[in-house]
Image 1 (spheres, rainbow, N blue to C red):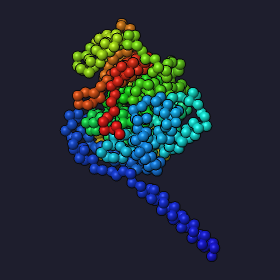
Image 2: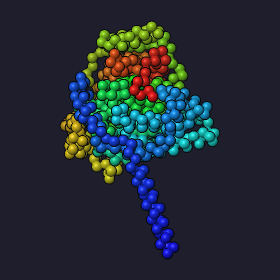
Image 3: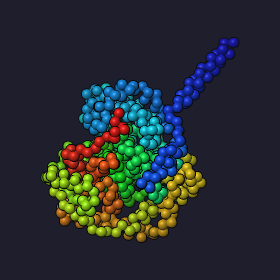
Image 4: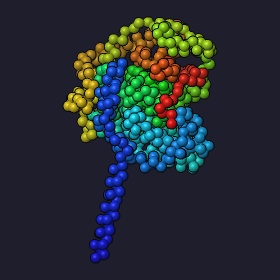
Length: 559
């Protein structure tokens, strides 16, 4: 009898536990909606790339993303969030660290603050930017552990400034515990180890908050399609004008999430314009480093010739801090370099005096863009030496073949070395094309013209090598003709206007908010320098930002 009673109690307890688990699973934080009205409203958009076919992802269930941390986030009251707002919103890393140091803020509350904002805006279909597509379910526990370390007397002197700062990652960067999809349904089950730069971030104490959407396959899939769209994550939207302004791409989620203050900073990647474009479109600071300064190991590739990750932040100071936290020599990246980037971390402490700056202004931009023209005049008035010039015309023939042949080879290597064949069924571009074609409405609503172009490109290895050599020479000629003649520190461009030339030249570029058009669309000033001049660009950029603070947070994401 006692045995039977004991068995009955166990069954009842088990049933109660199962009922509790079921209730937890039944928490509905987000409900899919019919986006056809929004799609129809954009049908006549003057920008053809913004005439969307869909906005909401057909495969991503936001409940699966947001439910695991809901219990933690729900503990933060609206009143506490309001108290934290002035300490964190739009503040730089050193200000936030000082609040922690002086006991006004904890790492746990810092993380919860950003999660609260993400839940507040991303779970509301009227405000969502479709940007956060994965969250680190352990991030709150990890923040608590850092608080414990603080209580035990771990001194700030031995910490990198990135220590404890919540960072978001573009979803083509391998990260343990979260899928790395590159925005593709073919990789939606891709479980991986940490990429080299994520290892460096964690070594320096950064907290990986989650992953953000991107233009699928880093915008090398479809032709003329919307930037910021992926079959996995849906259509990323711009906080300065949802469905009004482009997000830029391919690091669309990195730009929009920083603009909306969803994290301290984010990491993007660039082949040609993919950091500069979304940084400019979302009024944040983005830096595309010299190829080789940051490792590419464990990042879904387009081109081993031109790819690089880079920092995307709200200000120049944070940009220098995030960049320095990812540095390190990687023996598995054939172009990785070391000991060529001194002064990056301290760059914001030593802004370059305007009287010492020699900058090149492109005459065509002076004649066609009034904001650029006024900025140049402002720089002159501040004391900078400005040389107006016309870059020489150089050929960019063969650029597409670099991307085609590199991606055909490099993606195959990534899939072989990083993915589990039980979880990821494709092994090549050809496989991906076949996979996508089986369900064009969900997997490739905008087609896959660029993928098909990769398969049809017949450029030989010898021809490709000649193209790479020639384009690097041409790209450097484009900038160096004036830079060498006038001893310039940098050439001034707009947004990603000259990203292709900087890409083939393998030159670094730093873009900083320059203002807003009459429509409200952000526009940025881009500083392009010679290889390994990142610290110098950051010093110049810090002076520009201090003298001309143009960034204004979007009115719809201030609270």
